[in-house]
Length: 535
Image (tube, rainbow, N blue to C red; front, side):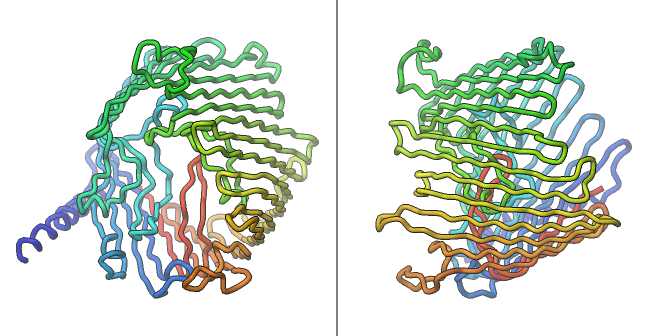
């Protein structure tokens, strides 16, 4: 027993030493011309997921990022900690961890950027690889109840070089797809898997043009190596008429997996070869814009890439949680969007998106039509009125029909005062094995704020969705509807600190930011989010 305790305490001792080192670096006087910067995120929480007991669960998540920079050299790291009062060895106890989850060093000058350790990068438009972080987002695993930073990264080395119109980027390292938490890693499950080695060469051309190629090799542990390549190009076809307000940026990228030399050709005719095609064009003129995107992805769910989804990212609450999730294993589609300043006080945004599952995957179809009008007095920000209408379906999510509408009124007064009222309603028909299942969502958001002080908001959601209603042990709903109400208070405590407190019932579900969606767990209780930046 003594030996087992020694092994379990060793990671904790190292974690404590790492924490003390990071704090010492932040508090110690920096060397001449050096600078220490940092970000602190603390999330204490009281309560449990809605309809779960006991309801007096307490949780705490903390994250500290520190970086020291001097003369082009930067050294940084991240420490994360997660705690819960749940002593169930199959639940909360597995969520406990204190770990240094990122460490990196970088060097920059006018032409060269070198980084070792954890890094984020992209090849082309992301058809072959994109590693990224969602700032401020914390993933929450429902099974193990562990939380960690939303970071898909590579643990390795990155080299970027630029000289005149030429640019080069290459990297190599182990990939973390952000599905394994540091808590699981502390118990032997590796967060970093396949070794990725990639490169990109690019040249800038006249008319804001670019031409380049990328290559990537994946070497999963115990699996066969795979090699991919892509070519991309872009140009502003109306650059000579820029002084007249015209612009037409066009971009295209084609990617394929290559096992033989003939596979590199997009005209090889072999439909079994993994391939992807993405294109976009945007016509701009004096505030008007017409954008078009198209995609054709086949067997491109690689785990380490992130192709453009071609789905509008909504700021409206009900629409944001119902965004279509890209099925890169087999999906093709198109998206059109028009932005039109109809009058000095009236503007329109209209979007149409469509996607279809290809034959080698489960057949599905997604379609959405969205229109939003904005009314505001010209040359003034005293108030604005927005209204939208949306209709679509997504058979991949078993949604046979969905139509929604909403209105938002925002006003601004003296002394930095502002207020906003949002009203939304949505009706959905879900397809089930027992026939169509209709439900309705109503959402109300009321908020007031003052610049330099903070804000206060009330959110109220009522739904008849069977997935959100209380149920008995057999899954039968025990109420015709469910209501989620919560209050959010936010305070700006100086220029570097901010506190946000939520209390009430929060509806769980999907949330999307920067084209990436994740699950937000429901909560009945209170949650404080404290953020600090220094210096």
